[in-house]
Image (tube, rainbow, N blue to C red; front, side):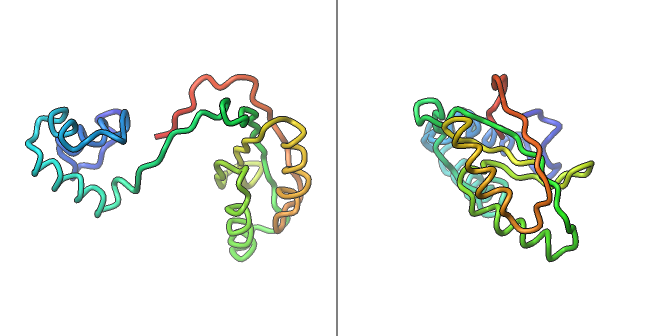
Length: 156
């Protein structure tokens, strides 16, 4: 993460803590404190503050989709028939329940949402699209782009 991407209230130690945890979220507090140049207690206090203030929202395992048989990725553009606030809320609530939808973003453009969908293969994707995504509230049409190769996919 670029140094310029941090809020002004974060000093260099806070930034180094976040950068270190991005590389290894399971790092012990002892290793983290050595890595950022603080003793253990001040490092723990800073980490707790970063958690309490919502800069760090949690820790999770990074899974290998290929080993889990989930290496098919498709992006679906979704256009809604209604974009009033209630329709958007209905769609947002329902799409969160579809496990295969890894990401969902509201878009400013010729369609309303962009979904990243991860499945085992194209047949499973077709079922998810036809039975689940197309049945979401207010969906009028969809368009799919199948990923041939992921060049960079590591999130934040």
